[in-house]
Image 1: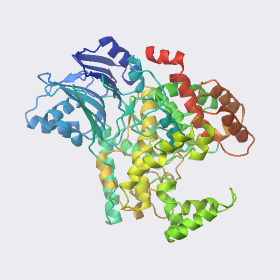
Image 2: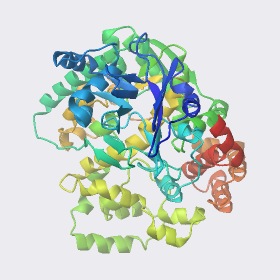
Image 3: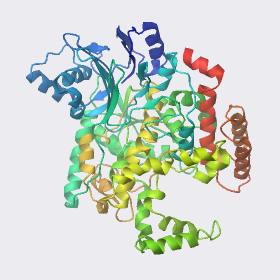
Image 4: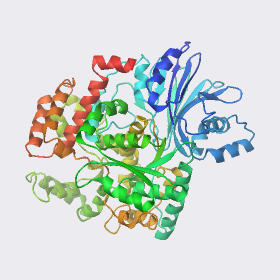
Length: 624
């Protein structure tokens, strides 16, 4: 695991090594063990290394034998040994035992098609000196990040936005449209970021750029579900075999490994498979109260026989962490569980360098409770379209809060107009109340449902549950789940691996019929059945909790008042109506509604703005 940075100029100009040094120093946390640079006319590559595989020889930037191909690489390739053998059989000569060098020779052999052979997580850039071409790619699911700025002068890129800012050629400013979408999604959907002019390379995409300034982006893989009606038991066996194989591959490293462990089935399944291979350490965090996950996690660890470590996060711990967490996130992500993830990563790094986790099971196997909604709405959706539209108009006239109104509204609203993924914080009407944005902007910007439309258009032939999963695979998972996972673990120089997000396992999951995913009154039904005998019985059917942060209660007391004062001091008054936020906070504190998530979304934007956008902090970020 590492951090990469680089620049490609579209004019005769040699990159400054001192600039590359600045870009890499600011992401020292991604690679505290080593650094490296390589430059020639128009091209500069920078690298920070967290040593995991081939500790002695894995220095980067790395090249092939005749130095015609250079690479900087962040991630892990889990099938690199089999790829290495194949390439050696084809005559390629290796100088190291690293997975990085495998990508170099794979590129020599297959060109841009090399990405299709990789099983792992990655963000890399290859400079082909013969073609005078830069080739950069991001992994299938978006586990590892890749940011870039492209204009008529240069292509600047890196693992984190703060590297681009530290180059000195980026003047941070807010992309208003991103702010508007952030308030709904609680993250900025790719390929955009909260920064004007800086973009994210989407998952399963690659870039090709040349000296003449031409750049193109291509998709090389699509996480499309195509259910096939086969026997239930056949799929159960495939899940068992493929997950076991994935965990074995994800455990390859030359350093200590561990596993995050919550109260749910996903992380428990990973820990159980790891424990069958070797003694392991597990880590959990929780909050005081009835949903304290550390209690169940400790019981699970005892049943599995792991060496377990846990921590209770106090309110003070949680809020004291925010400045560091926000700086590491690069752009605001209003998921409170990101802060809990920061703490469990901090705990794990005291003992190991690599940790495995259970991200991805819900998206692959249908684990979110919202996926059951189409079943409950089926009676209404079976009505003729004209009847549903008329009923919808009538229901909207009923008083807000009336019993059954919300059910009738959702049941008479097409899926494409009601589901955006696992978060929908602000509606368009709510945004109009809190944002200082003119009405014309609301009319012309690409709103959340227009963003989701591209994925709905590709799945018209599929059932509602499958369509919802595809939306989450393309929006929620890379935008929230994987973004916070990467940033909060790398903040502590901890490598996170996610065996459930393995392309071989996805090939099994994508074919499982919906009737096997959502069944018997539960979600992720077939995955639970596949884990019988592997995961302790008391975990198999526990409801999903995530990290149950007690935010609603915290914001009713003095903490809520302090938060409002920090929002007012953050400098966001040009974008947000402070009086509207104060009213919202007052209603929440008086018990006249639950506004915790909306307040938190604004608060995260405010802290991010204070960190990256105020003049004093702009200079601090640039100079780190």
